[in-house]
Image (tube, rainbow, N blue to C red; front, side, top):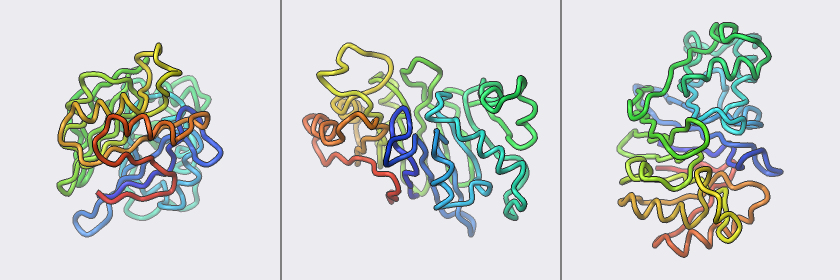
Amino acid sequence: MRVTAVGCSGSFPGPDSPASCYLVEAEHEGRTWRVVLDLGSGSLGPLQRYVDPRSLDAVVLSHLHPDHCLDVCGLYVMLSYGPDRPPGAGGRMRVLAPADAPDRLARAYGVDAPEPLDDRLDFEALRPREPVRVGPFTITPVPVWHPVECYGLRVEADGAVLAYTADTDRCDTLDELCVDATLVLADCAYVDGRDDDSHGVHMSGSRAAAAAVSAGGVARLMLTHIPAWNAPRVCHDQAAAVWPGEVEVCRPGQTYEL
């Protein structure tokens, strides 16, 4: 399994990265299977450097804030009006997301009902702790702590485990999400000393590291969702004060082998 950080900027696209989007790939049954975890604002353009978005096997949305879902509207345009959809891509695009995604994205697209999007997007509601299969991937949504319905995504394939926290503050459910993970992609939008009084939205580097330590068995910790106004080195150092191993910082355009 390999993960490409198409976009990893927190809360909005930054000068060097779009918002959240992670392309996850694995070989299975003679072909490469591809899903994206989130399709946030600004991510659809650079995603095309790595794959024709119309050929994805699924889009998985952790939650419905714009920096994690808004470019599904652009994907709908590609699916609806592109001259040639790649062979073998099947019918409608699978979109695994919180239950109100059809209405939320239809309104973002500019219509008053979800039906106009259903001709190209096959919405499936995520259910807490109910695994979903996409080719070789088993994807388990785990509820996390954010102001809206939000799921951390545990992706398993080829004996590897990717734990993507999405947007969350530290919470007990991160233990089940991250335990024995090959790689934890951890929200790090906050900074210790600046955001200490804010709870239930995001983690800082130290909170992310503490969550990974608490889960147990985590091999790699990588900070992501760092907004443009944060200094990545500060986030790194705050995590390194807690995490016993190497702290990695997610970089847009980088591919990570698991």
